Image: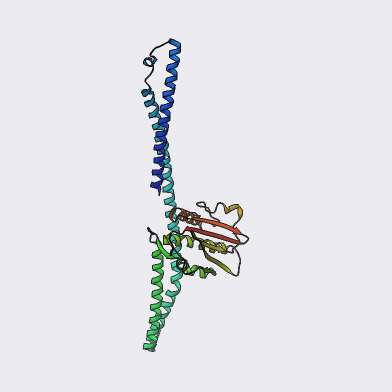
Length: 323
């Protein structure tokens, strides 16, 4: 994307340079003619051009000056855009590492219960062996339970591994399944926070997009709502996720009822490093990266609206194909 932008800027500068060169030539030619006419009037020269500096010399000097100015401006803009791109790359990496730390914490939460269950099953088996009460039926039952818990642990690893695998090409995904998979990644955190995610989406809705990028955005928005609920005392903590589809766009709407966002900070929530949480609990990059990914990677846009006690984030994506 950066290379395309720089090529467009280069083309614009080349066209401007040629345009300025042509205009400069006509201006110099006009001034040269005016000066020649003045000399004829003043000295009655029959051929005054012999005493004037040839027009091509003046033109070359001015044209070289214009070329140097344009090159300096172009190189300055190029450097500026490259530095901005590097800054965004660094922010993206920082956000990814922050997400990785959170994911590791979530893995620990999701593994704690099955590991405890497996440990209890093994201890019970050892106790049965010591007491001589081990029988084939009981052994099979407990081994099946351990096998189920091992499968759960394996699936958890697969979910996290797939999430961190970079998505280069777009693929057709079921929106409802993508959001359900995103919720399963942070399932234990949702449970511990007593937050209910209500997914009201038609199973048939599909979109061609970069799956992991969209998953990261949905996760960021859900975690943002979870953090908002930590600041309020509510019995029912619910996040509603719906989808609105028309002929050109698909809008994924994430709504919570945690009291909304203060109007004074609403316009800053997509700024990098802006966070209402302390340094321990927030990097201030989640919403900034979500907006950047939607706009730069997915070709859509991310909006937020506050209504009374509701905060409503809307991911608007272009519907490229019909399914």
